Image: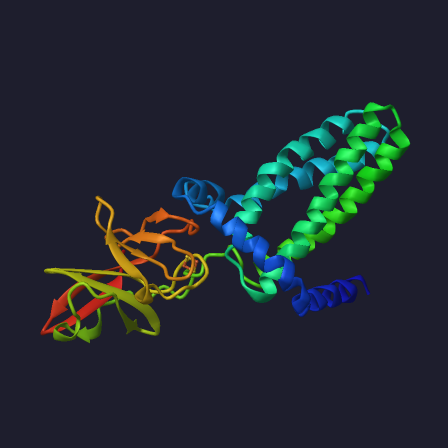
Length: 285
Ligand code: FES
């Protein structure tokens, strides 16, 4: 019954086109605010090699859940956990807003309601803390409990965004490509300085030739699956880099490392060689 209600809620949100009037301009504004590379890399978790938002979200969820437990046992230390959750919720929201700014359509709508639920939880917890300070413990406990309920709705939607909609998951986790040398294109057909997509045993691979050097990365962007062959190539001082056309993640071509987020996972890279006029690739051991 509860599962059906939640599924119904998700379905309604996903198809609520009228949310776009609010969601799109806010997401676009957030996208502008997080544009500078250091901000983008920090809030995305590029520096950590892991999305930052899901990691931080454990803190307020854990603090407020345990506060509710201590409240049930009438232990006043619950107040500390309510306060700690409030403090942790601020960077969590900033990292989440950054991730949300990269979404489209149904994901953006779900993200808006996810944020609204969690903001409601935050406001209720702040009101709870103020009530506790006034020594109105009964009211404080009730507000906290309402906050936890709002937080669980937000958490459910956040989980749906990740595990069903694949937001913030590694889009290059599988398949990985051929383990043995596989011919992908005639050498004469690979133009210099032009990102080119080839098929290597069913996996889309990006080839880039610069003089005598041929570099190969997975063509599917690890962030949200964007086509890197449609991106641009630039030089950042440490080597040629390809920038994804969807959200601007930039990867170094010689090692796949992320130079600019929102991606947090390096691109899988491949070895290349030329045999009998054909370019061959294989997964790097
Ligand atoms: S899909 Fe988002 S940066 Fe590539």
